[in-house]
Length: 114
Length: 116
Image (cartoon, rainbow over all chains, first blue to last red; front, side, top):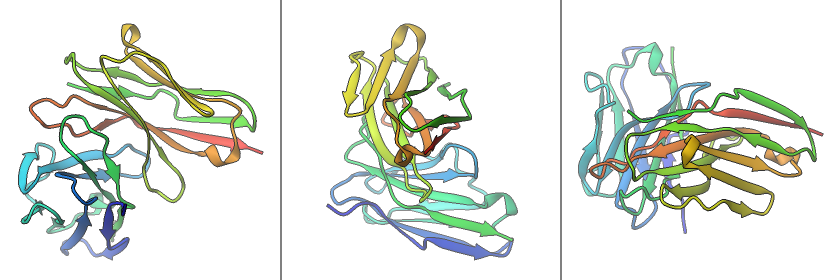
């Protein structure tokens, strides 16, 4: 069974530019999550989807971050405009359901904002 | 609000020693889930174990064991006869699964260094 796929793996941009990350969850997983992991810290949840609907986006900085999962499978996370403090690893995870099931993580996208 | 505390920032031991990683959690819910993940230098988070709040039975998997104690809100992780390949950052995480929102709250992680 293929794991969670993410691209790109690395991205370097200038501040105020925009960037987008893509995630393809494990086949059949209805729930998809985006986390931000700043160096030296644990991951922090940004947004949770159930199929194509948002379950929790309370920690998403909505003035600059947006995410979508239009067909209930792949998801895209966008930052516009990027700030220096957005430098982090962006992790995508998926689970079969949203009842405390195990979340499986992708390899992440490492973003550096200069 | 839910919270996970991993007080040990870094632990360094010599290979073959036993080592315990501490995890203390806070939650208002009676139904919750606890997890441990391993993050090797490659960066990918690897799932190790999941426990629900109604199952306090300790678990052993090879050299790994977990001690869940609701009375002290702790979910500690022990590696027996540590090996160099165990070197990684280990995260404890909590999910309350409230209203279907079950995003994980992670601790800050414990960096485990196993010296040969």
